[in-house]
Image (cartoon, rainbow, N blue to C red; front, side, top):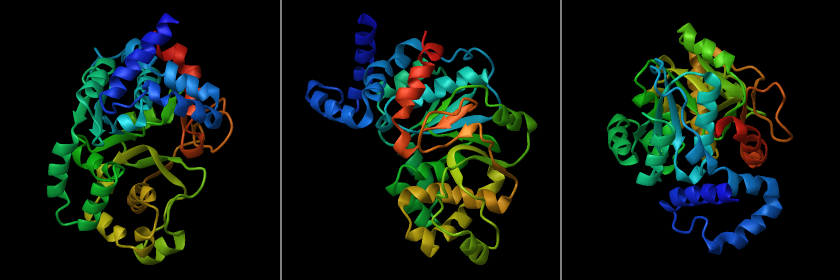
Length: 321
């Protein structure tokens, strides 16, 4: 019980630095109501167990030289502690040191940044204010892109990551991924040096524009079911002037905002036409337990609570010491 209290206290200290109401006694009733919807196992691992990552996990390879390719993450305290679990599982199962660049979505606090640096020494955090100033300059001639980025933190994935990446090739990871085994296909791409783009394959087609429309209006074939949760990218495929033209497409302008960012990356990769979808070991499913052979699972949408009840439950003993 003492360990649980310490984990809960550590989690509360970090989360309350951004939200004074986080995990206070006034939210006990709310959590109880959520438990009926989420399941007690998910709530237990979210509220009580996930805080273990703050005090009991550290990049075990931080004293080794960093690899040449950066790993970029966009997020903040609104995602809770899932980004800590994601990165801990990434370091554990790649068995390498990486230069991680965390793009603040605007919710970063000193306590949060400090916790990241303790768990992942040497992490680079790009503050939102500094990024806004730089990207206003970069996107001055692309008003649709600039407006989208200002309106939705997801826009940082489409624009900031490619701009701030210090290497011609880079990795983009969502916070709601978990790595369960060595991601061989990813590491093979890293070591190959090839300029190509790879994505995990969505369970359904997320693009708001049809394949026929892309072929007719843009002159190339859209890759099917691109999901931007795990991206292996090259700067050679990214062109903000093209992004601006694609943002003006009527189907894009009418789409749900959260679909736009990954559609821009899908269009860029499709036009570049080198790479494709990662294999089935990089799993996105909308129900049920993780495939036993899945090296990675992306806990999207309706299966988000499985991140805790399945992922944290299984990886707790591996990542927390």
